[in-house]
Image 1 (cartoon, rainbow, N blue to C red):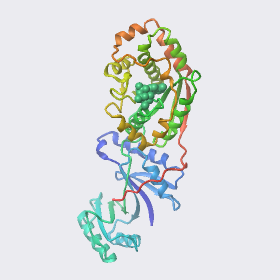
Image 2: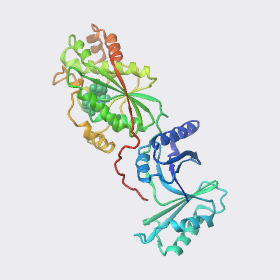
Image 3: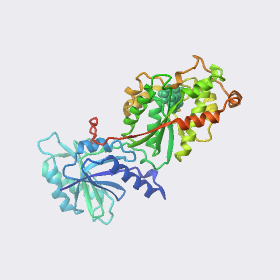
Image 4: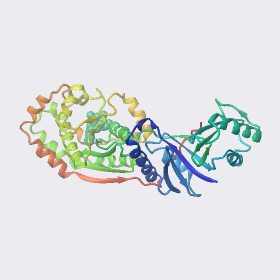
Length: 401
Ligand code: ATP
Ligand code: MG
């Protein structure tokens, strides 16, 4: 009997013209994520993505990968049967578990093909009676030990016994490209993940203090990207040497204002990179009021340095919530390792919390900010980090409903 994976997406996001683009992007994302795992082909049919499996396909491994593909709401390992009631009964019988914990079951049927002669409730009744007679199990619709799902589509019936929760979100690339400022702390990897999940391709920029300080943060962000590569298979990283620019800034910027001036320069450099990469927005891990640079006034002053939209997916989240999410996506342990990015260089304990753009323009007036911005862009090192498809993956928890 032919095994395949049937994956579904939430159709709610798919009104009108963007639908074919969404479906193509999802097929491509699934193809890329499952390469090397025994998937013969990935097709889009009847509002589902179908993965046809080779006999040696590794379901456990595939489950792990598919759970990290954005755009999938849920998926199941399924068997393809003819769209015919007698054939479905014949197909189900040998697949039912014997000598197992199963005492009760439920059949859930959906009918995507309205020309099929029976309605969904009728299919459920017919198959329910058949399974009961075949096994002696009781029917329990609310808490069944075994859920048997039958989906009738034109020309086929898909039979499955459980469902895995997908990652949700939108497939990679459908929302365009953004540039994320990645610091190596806890917040910015989470912010990047959340925006990836909404279908944006994320390009990363990291500002480091090497060689003035140890280059730890450079290695750290690359390691973070290797983790995030599970969700975005290929990531581009710009590593900008920021210390030389800071050394120039401290000559004219009073200590209290340095953090804000640094951030404004970071935004300008990130914007220039975003324009080169055809990206439409910047992303940060800022959360309102978390530290001095993230007061409402300072957020506004920093943002005034760029004309690009600045997306802050974490703006309304508490630190505890962000930490919880970073644990789930797998970046937390690495994020908390000590490092020194450029932010600790030449800054006082109590930076200004209520800056204004006018004040900043005044302070920056005597500095060749454009020149510093260009230096930043031109001295950046560019790296591409790629997912290694067959690396060891954590075991996944089975969700059976
Ligand atoms: P994170 O945990 O992401 O480091 P944070 O709580 O330490 O955030 P800040 O240091 O104020 O907060 O940084 C705010 C945001 O500015 C970061 O989330 C990140 O998007 C950006 N940022 C800060 N430092 C850097 C850096 N060295 N390189 C790139 N982006 C940075
Ligand atoms: Mg930080």
